[in-house]
Figure: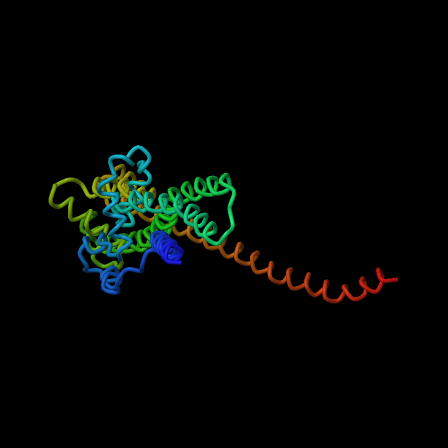
Length: 298
């Protein structure tokens, strides 16, 4: 009885740890408010606080990162981690933790079933262990890619607003660099904070603003920002050419966002038809069953 209780507690703890590793706790309210504050420092965006599961993941990743480096991160995954503000150690530790949990869950279930007087085929338990371990190793990558996709979409929306303000500043007679800095200071949210950090770095290093924006676009794998930096580099410091490039880029971003929103709305409309079809099918079965039953009873 004691062994069964210990196995049950271990199974529940492992399942809870796997769930929290897949779906970590939401960030504290202070960090969310800092992301909305346009004057928040850039470091506030990269802070990630979590519970004990995140701590275990970071601990495992810090000690096993060299072993798991052969299958850990590629350039795209590294850009996703920089975008969401997550460390390689935590990401690697989450993969290892979920893989080990998936490997041990069938073993714990098989042992619990054996204590109950039943038995599972060893081949079934082994196959389930391999499948769950592989799924656990891949799940953090899938979740990271989904989070990065949503954050890139949010960054692109913020970039469109940033470009609109830059165009307004240029029309008011500001220079290229001054317009970029004014637009970054006048835009809220974490995308503007990233842009402010990149522009502030160019002031410290003395390089051009489009070089800093291009480096940020490469680090975060944001294509629109890289294309914007390339357009600014080609336009140079001539206000008319820069303004034309910025207007064209802002229009392209708006057009693509409208197309994506329309496609999402169409897909949601199509999904709404499925419940109606299911209800109509159930109604036909409910109405037609008595007649068919009476017909076949003859």
